[in-house]
Image (cartoon, rainbow, N blue to C red; front, top):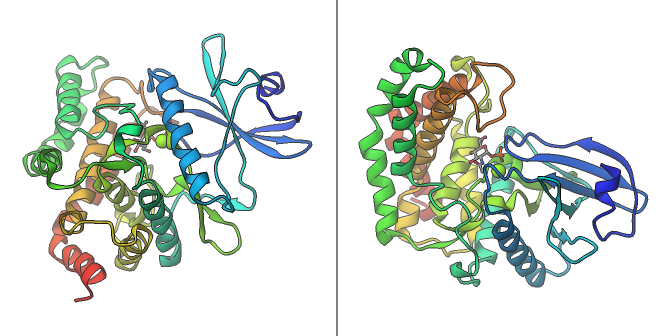
Length: 353
Ligand code: GN1
Ligand code: MG
């Protein structure tokens, strides 16, 4: 690891290297050097088959953000000594960032203040990239939020039943299927141009925004792998998915799953503030639909991986992807049950009535 670090242009040497974070795709390490601290990551090239394009996107976006806010604590790509955006070592694809000191990442939102700050951070990210034309970044995972594509992947996994798990998922799949048509309609509305294409983050879970360790104000958005042209609804939807519940997607005890209204309200208010008025009325109107869509998609993505034998998401035990599916399904059911109230809550935040 220390040797790998030497490939990057830092004038420093690694003293300590430790695993960092709770990501399910890449391998992330915190590197303490003699002069500073860094984050080194091995990009999962099975999930991201075009890592060079991904790094070009990240470079474009981080430079833009730094130009806009030169005095800010910005994420920077540290190039290799030969000037590349990443180091290719054997079959590994490695990159390095500056480590942002005195920041913290949360796995679960504890208070409305956290929700407000994190959502404001993601909103600010959208706002500050809104003067960069969306075609300046490439669609690095083209069908990432395409619900129809995710449904097809699930159907294929059920048909193929590679590891014999299909009988055990029939009940949960029958439940999920009930929502397929309305959710597909939400996605089709987005695709039909009802909302603008923007540069979006696409993986806005709570742990992907760094907050100042003392003030808890947002500092920087991280995990930029999925930055590409998309809809703000993907971002706000994934925030609903990961902020409103008091436990995370790994929780097996479904009785602990609930929607916290005060957190929901703070998340919408934070996003409203961060985006500084750029959201259109249709985007505002579709916030709850977005939450439903992201929860539905995540539930079926976990289910697909369970059926395929856990080849995509890191797991700690064999049934974990099924546990995650049921967890997301429960949260989705609650959102649907209280839909009318959640819609009024969102309207109240945006329009004050
Ligand atoms: C993956 O790697 P991580 O944990 O940031 C996934 C997201 C999922 C998330 C679920 C590229 O993100 O889409 O929402 O797991 N990222 C990719 O925890 O598939
Ligand atoms: Mg991610």
